[in-house]
Length: 522
Ligand code: CA
Image (tube, rainbow, N blue to C red; front, top):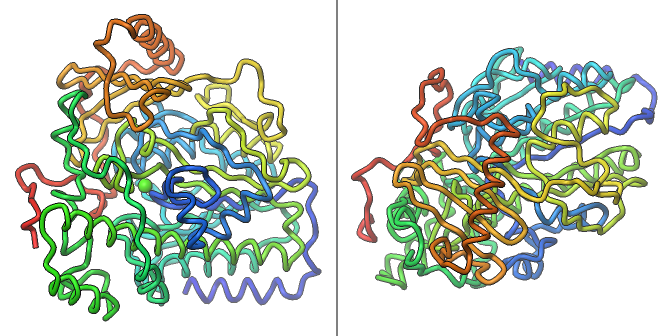
């Protein structure tokens, strides 16, 4: 039904004139899930050289070469739904109602697509949404239910549901290109292309099932972290590749389970695993390699979609007047500290990729150092579109930064607050500056202070070191200032009393207490 409607729309538009060039720029906002910038070639992070050599992200890199790559882009709560709500509303979770996974934005809250529609834009969102309510503020929406499926995914829209054959990354790109073909060409457009990949359980398209088989992914220096010299909570989390990444579901060792109907593509690697039967650290290394390769294969499927969108804009003479953004809802641990997943205030978790191309406005190849946050996206996009934002937003437009003119009073710290109990990561709040990361864990009343200038891997808290007493005092004052600035007064620990979650997501559900397994989980 949906496909029929799209085809009809595409046919009718073929009768219209060639693409007009609206005075205001179009916006294509590609937003993936859990794609950490360590795995983007264009970033200068530890896995970037490997990703460049293996051409993991050639199209995202192409976008960066022609636009701005933000080196310091962060979320305020490193988990799917809260980050997406912050992007949509320009507000932190305590103000938009989304502190936890699967919650929906408080009804009546302003969302940026509304302002773009009021400014004359045609708006659409296609792909993963993961917020309770449907996006009625956009002209068109076509969404994966919850986390959605990697293989032959189903979508829901205002006109019904439809299942499409293929891999989620390819299908989301197909639907996006179909919407572009069928759009109202008398208006500028804002298209949100929201990928499912590379979210857990990292199932790539079959064309990449064997890609990277013959190479070894570099290991992070902290793969065998002992979690000493930090708050005790680092030892009780449940996101270890060793103990918490499952051989069956995550690493597809037993394809007899209905893992999105995986075909035969894992047979050879599973047979090789059983023949070798690795143990101890050897097993952790096998799990790391297997996890990372599937993750990177999923990233490559997203990158393919970026390439197809860029090619479409080129072919239709739209590239010069279209802002193209690539971002993802948070960072991810790709083996650092022996972990997968996100949630912590630590760098790998809170750093979001953010790349923006805007010919004639943004200097190609620029790498702004200004700290931006996901709360800034909404006011920035609205200002680009010439719309109006309410005065109550937490975020600030970074359009001046895009123009190469960072304001003198631009932020020098970011506020962070994590609420969800998932993966045994306790609630915490904190502040991140250019040099320091300060965190407080309410349940145990512990603090961490990391001096990232001397300890970039964040392995040793200097909170109790007298040499850092002044820094601790200044950072606590800054944290208090930010909480006051944003009107954040939630107690610690916060007890959830809000509306019940609607969209529970299987893959993001916390590991159940008492279910922690060791390498024997085969
Ligand atoms: Ca996510």
